Length: 349
Image (cartoon, rainbow, N blue to C red; front, side, top):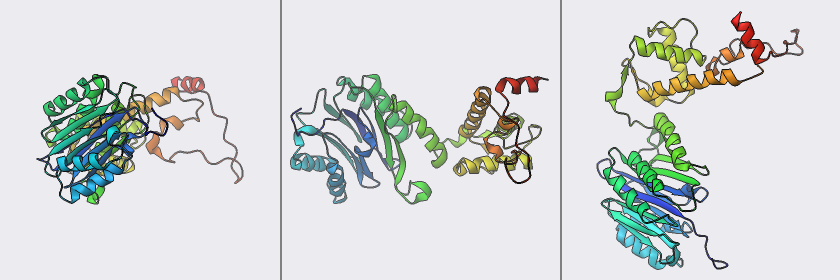
């Protein structure tokens, strides 16, 4: 690279539109720190675009302005590529408000570099392992059922399976815009998830998105709801007990104590979006409860030294049963913490 030339950023991305749900989205992965801060741009009803390779980000701002002015995706790509002083080393992907798609790859983008444009989407990448990366992404996006987040994530995974950025992995992002889609309807950023630096950023992106989905979105199929029968209620009670929210026998009956404990858990974990009043629970919430319970049990087996009884409370126990403060105030000092081995011997007696 010549002195003073812009840095080259190996990246692969997909920009897409869901006409049925009126959603616009971008998903990206790159061997570049925080690709989600510079590649995705979008606005509900207007369109979305990806600016990458040696783009300085100004193409994103200008591109959205042109889309707001009513230019089509091909017209936006033509204007941006023609007017940019870095036209030979930038890459663009644009989908407009009507789902028309267009892309551009500068002639000096590092190989392999190129794009694929399909119905309602465009895939583009540079410094890739091969052209199979963008081909696989397009094919997977077309073949994957579900809504836009699922299809965009599937496309990213397909691109990585074909080699992705030939320098490796570092960051990834998933953005979807829809009218009143943001938190409490105040914004159009329905999905806004980033992984800025990670050995396997796409897998980490998918993990973070599942939590984001549970907390903020309403995407689960109502047909998957689980009835609060004795088996499910017992599983919930056991998990709440381990986590310190519920004390007493686990009867399998959804009583007032269980309701109170469950409501506290929901509130403290910001899952108000998952509240049901019809005697059912979302399976994702049940899975989350059971996972956190298993993690808590594992923590108790590996944490030492401990204060007697501390690990039995769980994170939901708050200050209940806490020892009085040591030092002044009339109380005697607490005994020194016992070791994990001492704790186990005491409990086995």
